[in-house]
Length: 389
Image (cartoon, rainbow, N blue to C red; front, top):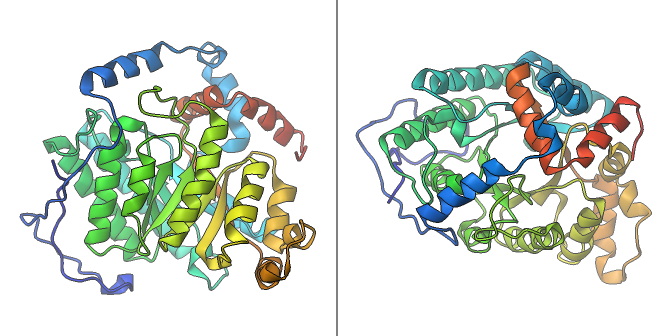
């Protein structure tokens, strides 16, 4: 099976040179080799098992869910989220990525509306840039593939009439953003989406787009093979993954996932891929710095760190930006003196994930986040009480 890829002429890395027209009848095929995933019967069983899993957060009303999760939300509109992004940079030098909450669209009209909402967000970002010259510090945009599809793929599926429509919608957003010099990220969802997500990403890279990144989940077994397809044209947000996946396709213990995040980051950086290391675990981050960034002498322009807005880590994050973390950190022998000085002088880019959306939709997202990590309710209360921890 393959993902439809519109054939276009060679693209300049300057998005202004992108062609504005395309021949919708032309396509190029990319083969899919599903990695470490169950058959469709197993997928159906795992989906039922996930549906059956209940927690206290399934029983409390949406208004209370929204209250507990309110520190993690950036508002209800693009303007709300962009105003917060501007404020975070002005006050703390935090960069941001903005995401419209929503998934699993029910009809084509909803999918097309998603396209228009993302174009509106992209316009708002391009017209209100941060006062910085380095492009990678500007706000970026994140979106889920299911925002543009009316069907969920069966395990390993990447082609159908509906998925081809989803591909075209995703490409239209990527091209629109490219023409406006805005970087975007195609996010990961549960394992059923993995082949469509990654084949779409690699097809867009093959078509010449350079403003798009994607997400890799350390918990999925397949990721060990997936990273072998990444190179210096690409950018990836590396996460443990929020979806409770079955043991047939994924690791189930978080310490293992975090060890794999560090391991995978080293291989991706060695391949020239820009790595967005996304975790709130400061021990995992220190491991990343101590075993990858410092000994491998990784330049500060080759990676960044990412966090969900609202998790109280401000002192730690500001110490990364200022370089103070590296000035007061553990000592290293003379081989790493130059690297430590660069980190201390330049600091590390910190980016906040800013999801936003209307109450009902935002409530479903927050319920899932709280179910995955109940401690986030405690983080939320700490944030509301201005306790940094």
